[in-house]
Length: 354
Image 1 (tube, helix red, strand yellow):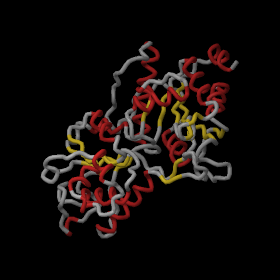
Image 2: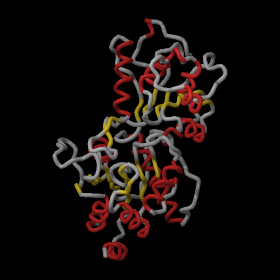
Image 3: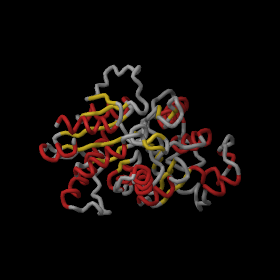
Image 4: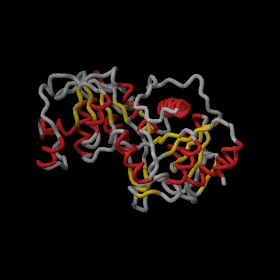
């Protein structure tokens, strides 16, 4: 009924962006109504993207998994993961420290980075660097690579792709690099060089303190890891705050990037080119100048990232109750356009009001 009414009466140019964890899936399980919501938009040819602070795998791998779970066709060009905007940094940096789960090495190399070092490579190079690592010999052999000249070629940047799993070791390694002499391993910059500026730039792909998984209480995310990195840096630099760079929701950088991706996907729908594998990437930090959308709806479960990000960016928002948000939570200055039970209610409510 709603589908027919929308096709017959609506000419308003709208688009959607959906968070994944807590909105479409909880863990590996589909949230009721998620399949119907996306299928309705596919049938209506309404452009949408997935906009998540999750990551760790290639965009194609993530949408293949989601498509299979929801039984809905989704293109790899319809997803912006927390680290997807790192693609725009490929021309800028040569050697990077790619921090995260072992899979992020493949992600960084697939993006086009020329010289990728994973934090486990540094543990393998010298175990004394990380005396409290939780990795055993078998895991280290599986995850790491032996890289020639690891200590003679400088790092150009540290990119945190997703939540690493060996926090004690990873904190030590990151601290070593951002407090080094010009990005060289085994060095420490002079005391007079202490500054808010790290020895090399460090990027965090998101700053979510909490996220929702199958456990009944929310869990710490990359934002918690970032707080530890920042606190340790201040302790080593005369209490000076670390000048880092953060992506992901709610940053304008990520909403700008996602806006470009949504426009690109709309153009593909209009041209009938949904199977295209090419995508025009924006320069990181540039806003669209001529957006065709009259209204874009961000559907999310986290007021502190999904909803406030949309609010600050000028998008409308639908806050669902299937993830981080609880009815008893205080929203304070966060003002969602609507609060709904689930993603299907979000989509149908929007279509009924336009």
